[in-house]
Image (cartoon, rainbow, N blue to C red; front, side, top):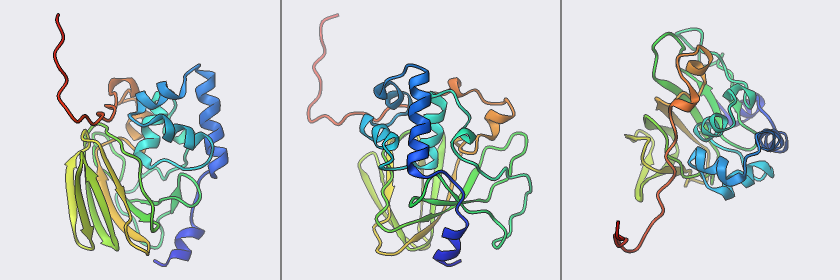
Length: 225
């Protein structure tokens, strides 16, 4: 599939509309940027950049932010429902959180008890995701191009045909180090489509995303109890 057909199929919000919707909801709840950031396991600066339309979050980060704001992820992003077990390469919708960001194709179906959520990600050159940690586990498999994935300080450079499987509870981020777009098959157990929230089998407050651990250069001394 060429780049033009991917861009033509994008369905999503532009940066400004998305950021404004997030800011409005946060203020309705009386939450500070720090409270949203801490609850989503993200940085204050990143949440601020989303609200100002400077950047857009990945699907997993959007899911975490939605939970903190008490909204279903569909309030921010229209995604395919995954009603059929089979998808066709020339019929799958392409969608994005906002313009000039990652473009997704949903592969996995939704049915009672399913835990795997799979997408094909079309990642532009130079794109870098925000560091995040959340429940579950995930796998990256590079179909075309290459990406670099950092998992708690350990760097993994992946090319076409390479894969990486790790616990999502570890702080991780990724970026496209290529000068051309990369295509990745990504599977995770996080409810990024909101299917389990929709059918009532998952409560957003049942899981809390762990915040990234600050790096320290020396061990903290124990105080007196």
